[in-house]
Length: 131
Image (cartoon, rainbow, N blue to C red; front, side, top):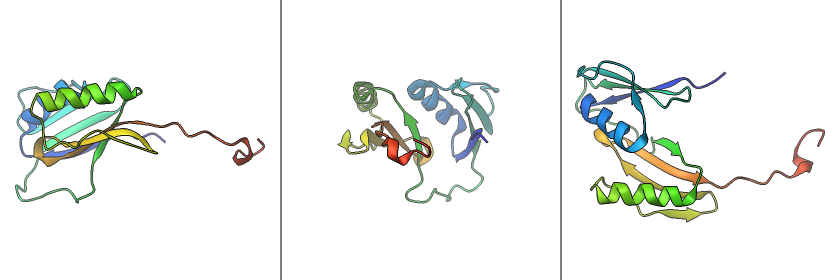
């Protein structure tokens, strides 16, 4: 089984499309003029669906977020610097810990976004069945 898509509710579909195209390299696969729904692809099998929320007061739970993985720690820092330079916020400082290098920001509709390069865990052969 493979995760296929995520459907997010946003107040302004067009603004969210522009944000995810510009900063996260997603490609619009549906009608750009629709104010109600947009379908974006990462070109690797994942689809992000953005729909206009029907409830302007609705919000995501406090810890809800979507995550983008980057393979290189320096690229995480460059991505952070680009968002900061463009005034995207709120945005955290770059965090480096045992999990890796990451930062968090808010996109349109206050969607929390994590961008990070996670450290690869060393697998102990004793932990692998028949290893």
